[in-house]
Image (cartoon, rainbow, N blue to C red; front, side):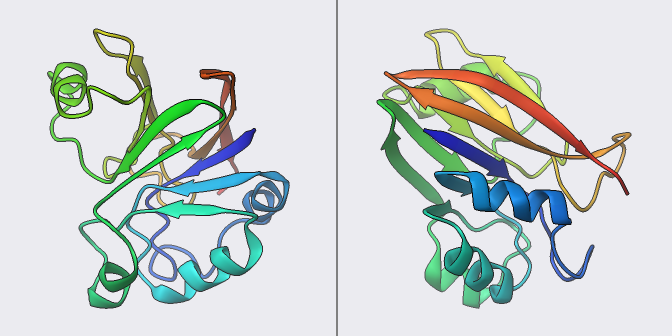
Length: 165
């Protein structure tokens, strides 16, 4: 199962729409996972229309319209991988231990908020992935998103994709 991981899109505040290569990745993915900070319901509508399957959560910059349609935490099983999606995980220091304690029955946690790509494994095996932001790089050299393959209970082929400004 091919999954696309995005977060912190902030459309239309940081960009009018998603970059063309990201829309192509949406079309190619079996599942699109969005870890919050959409900024506007129109992007949720567009992704729901275009993605084969969409799993998303709201972020700290998402208003009532998005919060009415999205959970704070989403959980699913994809390709045998037990997944959780959340926007915020707190400070980088101690993140793995905190998340392993909060999501003890999950194999993968996708999160956002920092706009900083992240790929680590917590004690006990929880994989933590933050795809960064495809529209607002902040302190990072590139805007980013991630893809991965979920199969037979394993997270494979995690790739961080850089986007031109």
